[in-house]
Length: 432
Image (cartoon, rainbow, N blue to C red; front, side, top):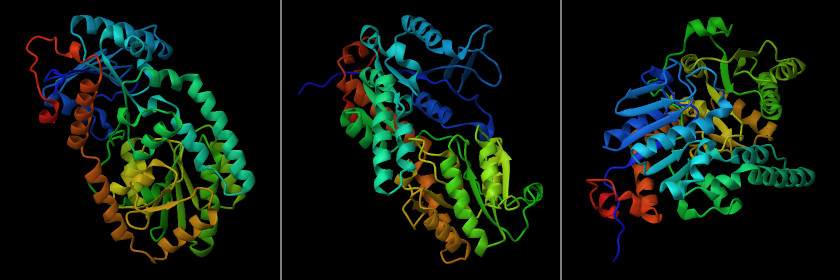
């Protein structure tokens, strides 16, 4: 039986607009652990990104080399794809890459030349605009007119996003990485992208802290929250009114029965004035705290204050990081049954799932939780165990490497991969 031969060690290029500076404690996200893990296994890893907090054009750390192309005067972010293409060609000419993995749509210019360059091109699902489809589904109302409106909105959004850029990306993709099975199904069903070229790797997650935080009395005083209060926390970018308004209406019903309840809203955005106005209209001004945008460290402290963490957004096709942070902190979480978090939360076991438009159901659920009708401690423990088991950096690296080698084996470019001096002939099945 014929088996393609590929190099034992791969030369990998990761492309992303945002790549964190290494060693910044809690501000580190999943990318450095993954890049480090790949390098630790002997693969060469190069990162092409835009900027970093230290303003350095090049960083070498943990055997990972990162180039930041926006760290020179006179360049704008809109030039990133062209600068990226130029730098990639320069590096590729010196030592050819085997795998190019673009975590957003920045790598499209390179992908269009993948056959000439003899590279294997993979994208993250965030390179396409699938999140907008999830957003529409999340706000759907279960009425005849609501379903019709949703269907028309979905059709329009899909046509504009697919032909407006997603089609070009998927045509140049040898493989696509998704965070959830839900995303994989949507790619196959609506985008007609082959199931065999889609790989589930649950990594698209910012770093979250697993060490449990104590509730901060200083933070309670800062936000004027009485010590005996039940605290509900949410985070939003304030770009969609409906998902926050639904939570506010549910909270209005909660405070009638639990007047000591408080709602903390983390985040800032273009609709903040309208959201604050809605809060005043519902007479929740003295029950609601707007923190504005916060650094990651303080977000964790606010989450630690909570009894219940709620996020009704379905506007992301990946996982919402603060939701996972709350689960890691053993908090009881409530998420949208239409968001990717539904693939992690087992309803009533390690969290709760609701339809975002079901205001009455959400209000009843929160009230029951605050009344102690369900064990918050037990649910929180199950939530903690779920995320710490699932989002393991070593597991992510193994899944990524398995996918890279599967792509190398299945694509016609495998012959180019065996040309590097000293490359060993390996049986992929045995290596993995």
